[in-house]
Image 1 (cartoon, rainbow over the protein chains, first blue to last red):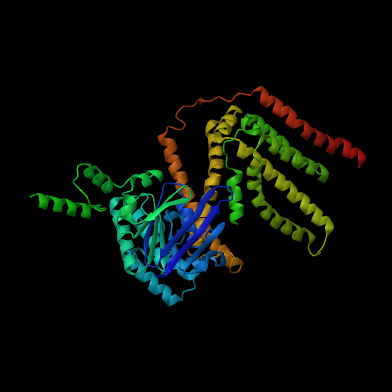
Image 2 (image 1 turned 90 degrees about the horizontal axis):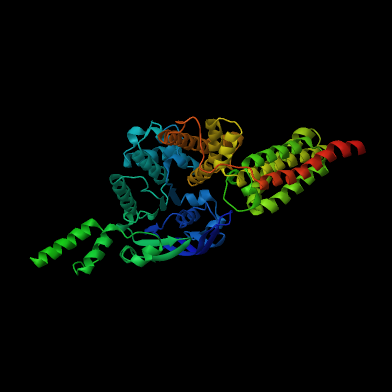
Length: 277
Length: 259
């Protein structure tokens, strides 16, 4: 598999002397869905800023599709790595939703025709086409979140990075975000999601990276990571609800499998009930 | 540009330390600040201005965190160099080389640098809560004193917002360095508008928070920790004033007699 992102011995120190990243080694392959979890100040956001060149390594290397980020401009890298920032207010400035989506396309030099086609397509995909002429600031928070995703997807980057997409979102909106991630995954996009919402990453990710205090504590499959209580405690994280329930049940020798989602858990419980009848 | 914003962020950001200047009463520091600013403005002799800078550095070494102050002012140097070039070109035009103008421009920029240094020294060593209380005790109505310190408190926040917005727009392919003058100005709007929007939203939220916490409900304000002028404050004022008085004396008495 081709490597989308390759991080080797990455160190980053902020100008105020804070060591934000310590010897980070990470490989993300094309089409992978990776969640980076950790408490506030773990270095998650600092790490993803290296993927599109917003930050350059203090020591070590970061390669995006084989290109050393130190040798490429942010604009060049941003064309391949789209970052969806946490707060949509930090990026909206245009008079209309249409212009907001077209902004990046204009920056990347797309033709007028391509811009019209892509903006229409992406606005329809996110149910925002009817709001095309409205100001982005008149949208609801859920619509704003969708617009923020649409502004990045419009230029079709290969890697899409979500920075804390679930902050302040209700359960319905979180499920919507999960659906978008699934949709992007079907298009073979590489997905990187940064969050401290541990329940959210229990479903639909190939790999979880656990970070704390600028270091990677573990990289592994969701089942291995989310059931490792010691590791999660070390990272100041609380085990998700379902693994916690299963751990409790283990004490009574009821559940021996490791379900992560509600559906999995329900299926296992039904199996047990059927067997006992 | 980013370095300038980072500099603004650092200049107004207080972080608790244990050195001398952090323990001095804000009223005394305010008085001291006014005294230094007046000295910088009125002293015109270049050697004496260098002497003021030496005094400021010495004061920082004794009473504050020099690396912190340096971090806050070093990014300003790039902007000051740009200012210097602009001032020189405007004053020297149509000449290309004018040593007199070059020197005068340098003096102007040097003074400006010292003013920034003084403000940085004051704000990085003074807790804003104490400054509010100090202003109140100096007779300024509490709501005005609070509004002033609240606006100072938000300068680093707005600077941080600016950096986030800058990152977000660069991530969408915005390149401020490219294009003609008008094009760059237009691109700059992509940074300014989100910063304004975020700031207005924050102001709105802060207003709600203040109201819900009964701000202004009581006319007379009390404080949990009352500021008191101590012996250390008086000694600081006396000893810190001596070098400045000496500089003023040299400027107005000694040098005017010599030259």
